[in-house]
Structure formats: C-alpha cells, structure tokens
Amino acid sequence: MYRNYTTLPLMCKLFEGIPSAKIDELFAHLAVREVALKKGEVLFRSGSKITDFAVVISGQLTISFYEADGHRKILELLEPMDTVAISLAVAEIQSVSISVEARQDSDVILFNADKVFKPGGKPSEEHMRLLRNITRELARKTVFMGRKMRTISIRGTSGRLMKYLIEESVRRGCKEFEIPYDRQALADYLCVDRSALSAEISKLINKGVIEARKSHFKLL
Image (cartoon, rainbow, N blue to C red; front, side, top):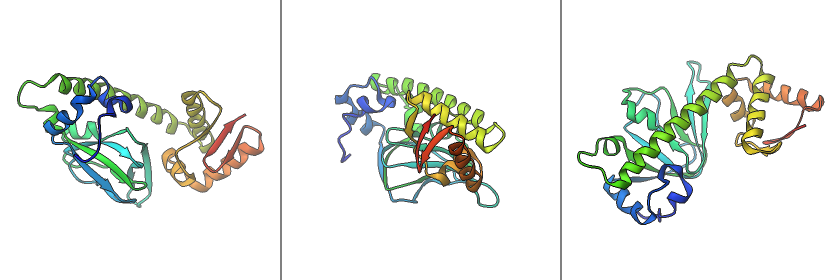
C-alpha cells in the first residue's frame, strides 16, 4: 500500500464509521490492490466474469454497454469515491454485458468479493462495518438505476433531457449547474442521438426554458 488511505472514512461512504487508524490493517487483511488506469483503458470488460469490485480514488470511469452495431450506451459516470461492480461481483455472473473503462487517467482500489463476503472466520468489527456500508451502497445504486430507468422511459429527446436536468437541479439544490457529461456522453446516457439532443437543446434555449453552454445548464 503506497497511498495514505486514513482519510477515506471521511470521504467515502463505503468506509464510514471505520476508524482511520484501522484502514490500513483492514485493507491488508482483505488484500486490497491498487490499479492505475490510463485514459481509455478497460477495468472490467464485457463478456468476462467479475470477481472484484472497486472504489474510484481519482479520475473518472464510465459504465457502458455496447449494442450489436457497436453503439455505446452510458449507464453511469463514476467520480472519485464512487464504487464499481459490487452487485456483479457478489452475484458471481459468469459473463457480464457491461464494460467499465477510464474516461481519463484514473486510480482505483480493488477488493476481491470472496475475501470480503466469505471471510472464513469471525470478521473484525471494521470488516462488519464495511459489510453494512456495502449493503447501504447497494441500496443507493438500486435507487439510482431506478431514477435513470424512469428518465429513459420517457418518450422523446426533449422529455428525457428535461427530466434529467430537473432531477440534477433538485439533487444539487440549484437551478444553475455543471453536468459531468459532454454532449456525446449525455446523448449516450439518455440513449438518444447526439444530433437530436443538440437540436432539442437549441429549441429549449430559443423557447427560454433553459440556458446552456457546453456542460453548463441553467433552468429558467
């Protein structure tokens, strides 16, 4: 372990409640591994079996799936302190249909699911706290995916876009904000065509519904 992870309980909900002084000991016990990814490098590949889950330490990752024609759909953009693939690792699925890749140079830490969920003895208090936090994280992910499914179930590009922007505004408590996607990534996330998305943004601007410049939006 070459990083100082003692601040993680203050930064990442997955380690909330675990004493800072116990983090290194817990990570050593679980044989946590560090991985540095270059932009475009794949962490988990479609068609493979996932036995580990990860926490993003720095950079950005995307969870995507590719249609038969090669078109990409973005399921989630992952920022520092986000978790990756917990449910897939726990479910022991033999072949996953998603890919996780670095959107920019990134660092992650990897946990082997068997070491976390099949400890082979009485888990320590810190290990038990981690398991409780994982349960909460899985519930949060379920809520997130439910919210996204409601968004992409809306017919029409404009409706999906406004649903997304309104939810972002509510989540941030502000009508003016930056989104983490460029236009192509936003189109992939909303499962719409990029040119159609750009056209709808222009229409909403002309109608006085929103202001938009690149990834900066304001609801009027």
